[in-house]
Amino acid sequence: MPLLLWCGAFLGGCAGSKSVSVSAQDERLAYMGRVGKPTAETTELYWSGTSVKLNFEGTGVQARLKDNTGNSYYNVILDGDSITVIQPDTVQKLYDLAAQLQPGKHTLELFKRTEWDKGTTTFYGLELAPNTKLLPAPAPPKRRIEFYGNSITAGYAVHDYSGKDSWRGLNTDNYVSYAALTARRFNADYTCICKSGIGITVSWEKDIMPELFNRLNPSDPASQYDFSRNPAPDIVVINLLQNDSWIINLPNNAEHKRRFGNARPSPETVAAAYQNFVKQIRAVYPNAHIIAALGNMDIVKSGSVWPALVQKAVEDLQDSKIHTLVMPYKNTPGHPRVEEQQAMANQLITFIEEKIQW
Image 1 (spheres, rainbow, N blue to C red):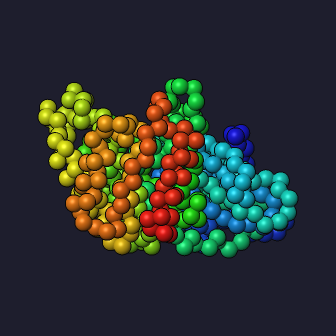
Image 2: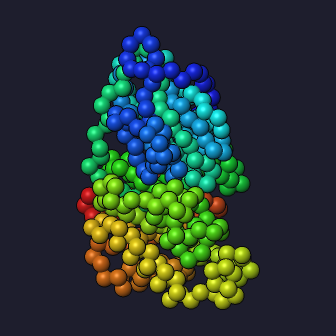
C-alpha cells in the first residue's frame, strides 16, 4: 500500500471548471465513530476506526489534514475496494484521496487505522477536482455496533509477521480487526473505543476503561461524550481483561502498586469491577445487546480461570440481553495477525447471527 504524500493549495467551491472546497461539517459527509467538532469548520478524529465517508461524481478528491504528532495513518478506501494509505503531517496539507479517475460516480472513505495515543488529526474539509461534485451523503446504516477493547480490538501489530510484534508504521490497522470486519459484514455503523494496554481494574498506563469509556476526546478527561447525541447501538461488544490478567500478577509494576498497593486483587474484586463496567454500559445503553467477549490471546488458553470468572459475573447480572462469548486461544506468539483477526470475526458474526439474529 503506497504512502500518498502529495499535497497542494487549498482552494474552494463546487462542481465546474475550477476546484471546489467543501467544509468538514458539510451535511453531505457521513462520519462514523466519536468525532469532535471544536469549530464550525473543522472535525477532530481521535479513535481507531473513526471514518469520513462521501459520495462524489467526477475525477478527484483531496482532503486538508493536520496531525498533532505525525504518527497517525489512514486508509483511503475507494469504491469499497482499492486501498491506499496517507500519513498526515504536523502542518496543514492537502492529500490526494482519489486522483485522475475516470469520470463517474464514486464512493470514498477515510478510515483511521491507528490508535488515539499515536495522534489526533484535524480534518479541515475537502477540495474537489474541476468538474467534480459532492453527492448526497450515504444513507445511514440501519444497524449500529460499538466495541470496547484493548490492543486486540485495535488491530495492534496485525501486519507484523517479523516476530517483533511492533505497532510501528503500518503494522497496526484497525480496518482489518475483528471489530471492523464484523461491522462491515453487517453493514453497521461502527464505533471502536479501544486502547492497547488498557484494562478494567489496571492498565499498563494510567487510564482504565471505566475511566475512559465516556470521553469524546480520549486524551482529555474533561471531554465527555454525549451518549444521547446519536442513536444507541444495537450491539455492544466488550473484549477486555487481557491486560488485567497479566498485571495483577506483577506486584512490582507501577500501575499495580498505584491501583492495589502490594496486595493481589481477589477474583471477587475483579469480577465486581467487571460487573460494574458492564452496568456502566447498560446504564447508557439500556436496550442494547451486550456481548461479554474474551480472546483470543492467553486469557482463554487451557486452564485459564478468566472465562469462568466472566461467565459467572454475567450470570449474576441476570440480564437476558447480556451474552458471553469465549473465543479460542490462538496459540501463537504476540498479537493476532490478519488471519487470526478474521477467525475472531467469523466466530463473532456467527454468534450474532445465531444468538441475536440481527
